[in-house]
Length: 626
Image (cartoon, rainbow, N blue to C red; front, side, top):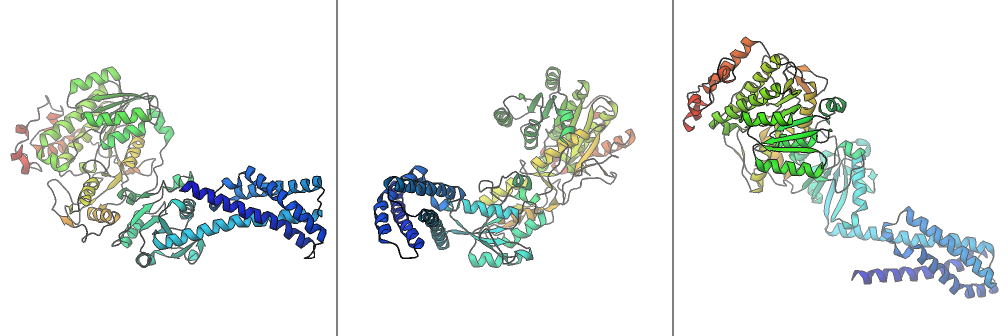
């Protein structure tokens, strides 16, 4: 019965205040006369006692003292007590003058300080008692928590936990920090228990259930070390927001989140030149192909922030298109959206779009990207990735687009699979068109795997872990470059500002990561043990896959751009002879003359199962399936 308990607490406080008011007045007399109170003043005290108590209780009630939760007492509550006590003592003095029941004036001064001390002390005692009982209760059953990092972020986290301690089912044990100067110190009432070297010992001894990593700038290597230290313990890892969110005051228990594999790729924030970006996008009609996909939808989200005239969302999947259109309509109701269900292989349909909507900037993200599937369906990969891209590139040049950005891949470097070969073909055609057309700034942006995209290892691993395993990895030495989707898209938009004459931009992907390490990290982050709770099984390299990926080929001497995380391969355009030689080599993989396919040599040839049959490269194994 919460209401009954509240009334009981107020009654107890009122009774306490009655004793404190009457006792303070008598004690003031006792101190004034050093224990030898004249009889007449004792009689005066007796006559004043009831009126003074009633007057003070009325003022306390009016000031709202009994409506406050004193276990959360702060400076505001102390100020209320000070003002209420001053008003009560002054009122008591006025009443004594009016009633002719005078006491020495110094008694009222002593009465004021005594009542302030005792009334405030009683409330402070309630807060201390509540804190003691809370900690006693926590010690008996609440989940033990450690804060990793005793810097500014760690202090903010500790403060948030203390602020919400009554509602939490956890007990913060203290901090772990590697700074020698902080060892043995107490911060926010919590001890620094040791360094990371003692982490496993402390977790084991105290049965820790949760660790908050309060280091917003922690590197990938350090974060992996922490995860490895926690391996074998059934605990949760949470992290604070990035440094910019902390500076904006966005650190609260609501902002803490469980560590996901994306957090392992923390790199310096992408610093974009917004003036440069706004210059080529603001007020423009922008088309995004593959708008419902992982990269395309994030492109739409970030572009919507940049003051565009309209966004043309083009995708072959109506469901994906519906989702991103609905999201953008909700978040940006004033932005003009044109959701179009189109197949980029249908040139006449695309031509009508360019005729009516006149996109000035095109981000081309639509493509078939799944490597093993494209190995067994090479004719579809060529038709969609090569001819579909050619349609868009040609129409952009024909209808006066100002800028065209091709989303490419690291698999286009020394391609060993159909998907990579088709993407490299598109890069070559884009550079050819850039040499022929000086009005449109063509460029391509090449990057590796993005975490969380459809078909990537992260959602697959999550499904396998949720199902109890096993987690399947193709090879123990398989490595890949990884980026988060927002990170990649922000760099793509920035690179688009640099594009001018067919450059191929390469994004800084950081260090390559072993896929098996990624699998192990995800298992540990799920509170499980690799090899014990979840098995890791090696299935063998699939057709078209490499052990390692590259961002540049042997001929490309990369150069820097104005952005520290965007590089350029300036030597890739080459001359007509070099381009034809590379297309011929790529075409041999399909048994198709790509030069003729792209219209470099007479009439384009149709792409069919028959024309692709007999390819002597990476499609040969699958030719009988088509």
